[in-house]
Length: 144
Image 1 (cartoon, rainbow, N blue to C red):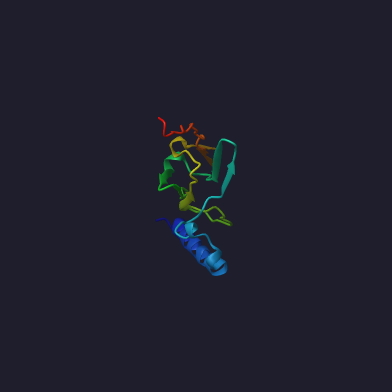
Image 2: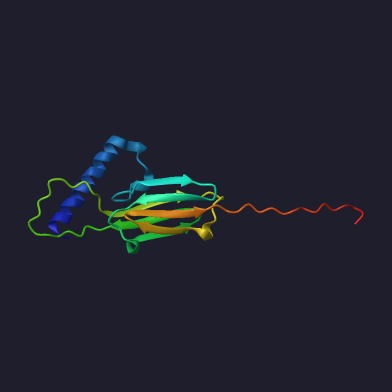
C-alpha cells in the first residue's frame, strides 16, 4: 500500500471514530462496515419506484446489485488510483473504499423486472410495480 493511500485510510478511520463519538446510536447501522456510503434518493411514480445513488468515479464493473430475501443490496468500491510521487494534498474530501447499502423491498415490487444503469456518476435502479391482477370468482350453489 502506498504511503498516501495508507495515510488516507488512517485519516478515514479516525474520521469514522470521531463520527461514532458524536453521532452515537443515531448513525445508520448499514454504514458501520463501510468506508463510505453513497447518497441515495428514492422516489415513486404510478408504475415504478426509482432509486438513484451518487457514485462518481465508480464504473459498472465495480458495482454489484443483488436481490436477497426481498432486500436490494447495492455494493461497490471507489478505488484510490492516484499514486503520483511528490503530491501534497491540501484538502481531500472525497471518500474511497468499499460501500454497501441494503434496502427492503415492498411486496408491490416486481423483482424480475428490476433494471439498472449508470450515467455521469449516478446509478439509477428502476423497480417496477407489480401489475394488479384480478379474476372473477365463480359462486357455486348447492343445485349444481
